[in-house]
Image 1 (cartoon, rainbow, N blue to C red):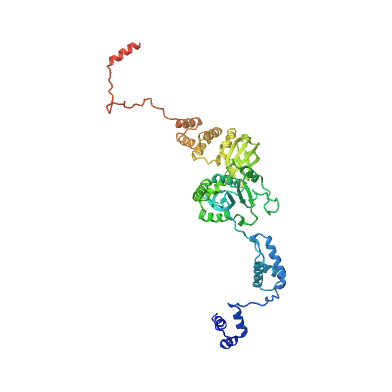
Image 2: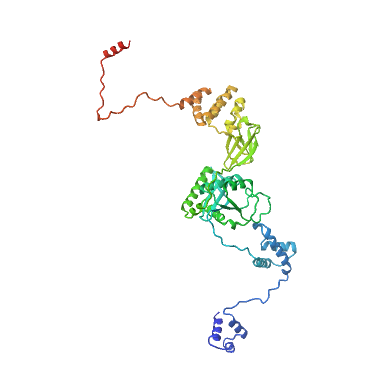
Length: 491
């Protein structure tokens, strides 16, 4: 570079000729001319591309493989090495891998790229999505599914964790988010999940979608305008995608621990509230919201109770009172609860069980049947699953020698647990076991006496009369003969 500058200075500043510079620096005249034409060294350039005698005949095959990538999922597209392996194995290419990879990179760079346009977030609009993370609930490590709704303008968000990502959790998440924001966003952008867009309704191109019944219902009730991103185009809902990364690293690392899903969601809501309270632009978002609607989504299904008084729903079974065995019932499912109805009457309510083959039973549903068949009480699944305290089992074992009478007494005690509650009956059984009492009537009497309040005193409250200071009143005791006079008058 120093000689480059000296030659240019000698000719352009000092006025020397090329012949003089040639003699002085010993450079060829063509080199001097090139230095004068280019302020900087132009570097080595090929006058024509290098010939590729082996690879040149395979260019059409490489271009065809790159076109295959356009329709392939992003994580399953062929890279330069894979294209080299296919050329070698399928087309008999004998050249080196680096030549193929270099040509693939050159062809990719020459292809037109998707243009992007800078966008401005508008108040009152939202983006929503699900994401997954591990949590620990009651000591058990589980994969949680988080529904997340973000307001891009103010960066306020709301999220709630569910045991499963399904129709119920999707729409329940909306209802909770609207309550949290205090209104309904005017427009929300989603991906193309099956609970929002009908599966198999056609190619997901453009803006038109055939929506599910649940999505149409939410739009009708809340008047929310919905829009769907193109498949594999996360940039069209970039705010919620970025927020997922932020929340996963800030709130879910390390793995959060909670005793219940409610406790975990309360903590998540508290963090979201802190963010909402600090967001200055949230007021502008809220000013554009639609008013809240009476929207309490659930999933409805019809099911028949079998002879065991169990209703099967989503792979799990839920008990109903035995009088409903064999009858058609309505299942009303939310993410954390399953209610079973006969007409408008709720006949049973259970926590939602997502385990395949899961079983949720209530002991009180089988008490009528146990009174008819008391012998089954020892092996009855509802009794075993109830997890009764040890006092119940001790009482049952004491009655084994009495045969059927002992079983009937135990069923009567189970009936009392439904009436008075398990803790109170367990306390009475502990005293009955210690005293050797067996009759349910005696145990019921113990429970009733324990709950009775002590009798109120007959004394009237008394206070010092006003104006007497601290001097207590004096009481004059009359002579006993006066009592005799009184007795004579009363006779």
